[in-house]
Length: 176
Image (cartoon, rainbow, N blue to C red; front, side):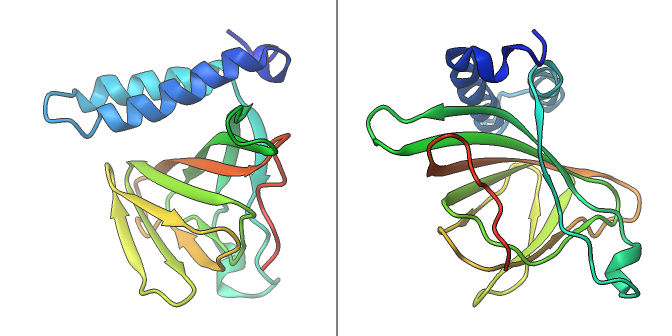
C-alpha cells in the first residue's frame, strides 16, 4: 500500500482505521505482544498516511518556542453511514522528546490511546494527567485542550487519536 490509496479508496481507509484501533486495543490484552502490536501500527502508519497538522508555533522568545513540536498524520477518514453528516478520522500523533503542543480545540469528540512513552495533557477544568502506553483520555467536542507534551528528555511518545467530527475529514484542529 502507499499514499495513493488514501483518500481515493475510502473503503480501504475504513479498514485501516478499524485495524489501528483494534491493534491499539489488542495491545491492552494480557496475551498481546507489545512489540508485535507496535510493529502492526507502524506498518499501518507507514503504508497510508497524509499530514494532518503540526502544533501551532509557540510565541517567539517563549520557553516553549525552543521545544520540538508534535507532528500528526491522518491514516484514515470515513463517513459514518449510521450518523449522517459525521465521519470518524484516525490520526497518529508523534511527540519527539520534550515535544510540546500548545492550547487548541477539536470540533468533535476525540479518544486518544497512548501507544508509546508518556503524554502529559490537560483539558480546561481538569488536573494535569500523565498518560502512559496503553492508557486513554477523552476530549469532548470544543473543549479547550490547554497543552499536551512529552515530558521525557530522551524517549519519544506516540498516540493514536480517533475523532468523530463533521464529514469530509475536517477541520480537526481549531484555534483556542
